[in-house]
Image (cartoon, rainbow, N blue to C red):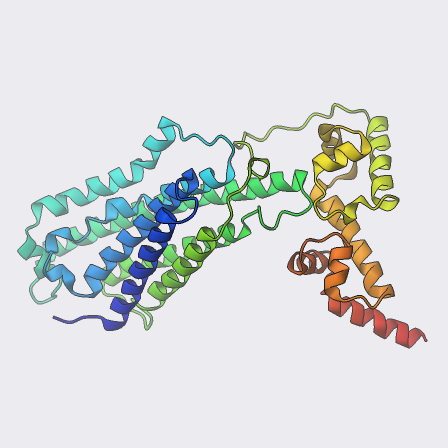
Length: 386
């Protein structure tokens, strides 16, 4: 019996990582929280996925041929489980309706229906014979190929559909945070969006390679590169998700609603007056230097309701709260970098940023240079002028 040693090691490592993460998620701090339950479910499904692959690459299928493929209906729940985990993490008063639960079962049910004829009508001996080109039955092999193709397409379609839904939840969550807070780095979960993109891409490649392998098409990285990428992503996801602090209610967002055109309730003169108050609060009182500044705090400071400020920002100033505050912070940082010898860290905090990493990102996005490069450029200009 031949064993693919390297893939066996990789899939064993995936199973080990998933197992350790399950233990930490289930029994660690905050394990009773709802989002932790969904996280555990996601990790369990990943471990089942890894175990199914491990049985194949290690040659274990020879001992349990009737179990091969039975993990497919369960692994098709990965996409829905990931989506429900994202909902429980980001949304206030999150409740999964009966309809959403039924829809989540559609993909796995289709996989089960596709796989059932192969599972019930093909004997263990016939399944083992399919593994060897010299002993396989051509007609039965074609039947197996069609079964693999249909289940793979359903798995991929279901997973990408729910990954996209989770991605859109995170995007809308981030957009809502930007309406109310000046510092969103720890609450926006940008890492989740990146993980979803990368995992969607890897599993698309996995599904393509899985099918091509059955028709005899191989490439130099077949069975090696994609499992390694999966392992790296699993390690990254386990680390980031287990270390993600629970969001408090003020940093969670409302259930997304269908987009509707916003109707202005303030007249232009009123918005102009509010805009003048905002400029005074920033330019004269320097409220932007408060690194915990929020829409609520600003509302209290200038005695204007949060809704009126938000409308003025979107309809009159054409920006959101996050963009307004960070624009003033970056301008202050530019002034400090050009006129003082304060360290970059000191400049970041004096400008109102909570961390150097947040400062560097905001500054680079706004100016096109890192803070140190901007300071160096100013020094060169001043030297030439002198």
